[in-house]
Length: 414
Image (cartoon, rainbow, N blue to C red; front, top):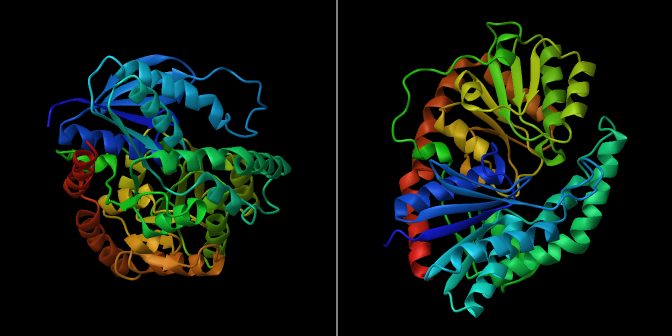
């Protein structure tokens, strides 16, 4: 296959850690191995172009709007035409056929650009990757905000929900229906899309891999222990690590309540809950109220999660909803860590209880606390789960399997 440009459209700065941005980076790395030259277009605060080891990033600046800080994300309709026009300008002078691969709610930008280019005689094919729908995710929030979250948290999500259900959901559906194929990684996501937009969406299930799976040479040197971990007491206690955004569906408050039960039982532990999010301040306040200050750290956004995973004894993901699976779980499997996770959405498709992880009912504080106590006090169980984690990663999330499956899709649509 000729080394032709492949456009990927992401809603956010693709250099950000975690979330859909990591999926975009993994797709770009796979596309390069297939034989494409990846060009990633993302919404940003400024225009610019940057070459990286996974492709060329094209930042497209959105106009500044006077939206109250943190109320809700900039409206989707602000970004779509700008991204579509930028992609059109880039591909118009280049002979096709081209693939425009958009991610999640930015699928409409790819369809928009593709139709514009076709009218100009440039052959393009829009495809999309989906991980749920924004309407599905925002509907889940209603039951996941509690009294220990602030009034501003409740008001922010109420305003965001109203906008998404009235505008964004229709636009997102138009993007999926207009794409040649929509790629999903889980049966749970396929069902969400079918319920939302009907059988008109052409859905295909595909394996996937984390960006780290493309590293050809593993560094033998262990990363240094991060400062937030060094400050935790007691220093000899097992370390629990979570890598997750602080948003309602991730259930970080459930984990904090479970850790309080573990502490009350007198079982020593340390915990570091890594990640940014709108509820970070509320969760820090809750940790203080529960008396977890000396043994639990919530450092927020960090430049690299690898050092935290490296020194973890247990990885925990207390999600109330995931819609699909979790890239942080995939990274924990790759790192060979024993995992405790919620049995929700796509996670049971990846993890078999008692073989790959300990699975607990989502939102069940007592069950999560019991699983934590069990792993903290049973080193043999930790060793057994850790030994199976890496094998599970190679079996389900290898870069080679992902490249082969994605290459088949690209060749087919071209």
